[in-house]
Image 1 (cartoon, rainbow, N blue to C red):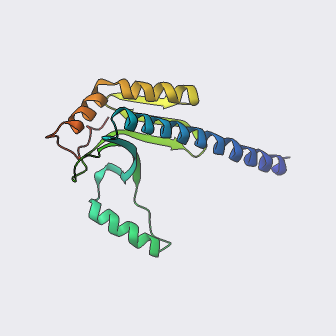
Image 2: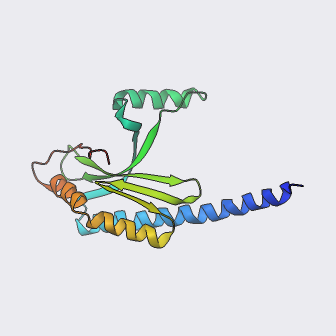
Image 3: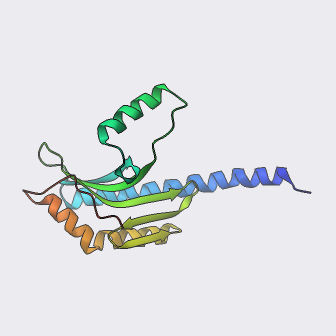
Length: 162
């Protein structure tokens, strides 16, 4: 016979492990984002940003729908995806570029980072740190940040779909 009590206890233990993993991931990204800001003297900001999946909706439509969905609890959510973006903080036009698509399971790990021609699966802190170091050292990522930093750069660009 199935022991539902034991299954429940295992579920509660899984919640605790997931909280620890998600906190570990957030702390690692906070460190990465701070290091980038420090090394660029604050000129480049990296952060997470959510976009409509596949770019099917315009930003004005998305903003209106999100505002409306807060008023209507039963609204169908718009499919979205998380991106790591870089933003040029100098000037008033705040140029930005999508650098990598980020997915993360409810339990924290596994995660996935996709950029350029890289599709990296992450299973623990060591593989997260390695994947993020490889991401920063990638020529395509470096080129996107250099173009963003250039005085006459074109912002609001999207990478080709990996």
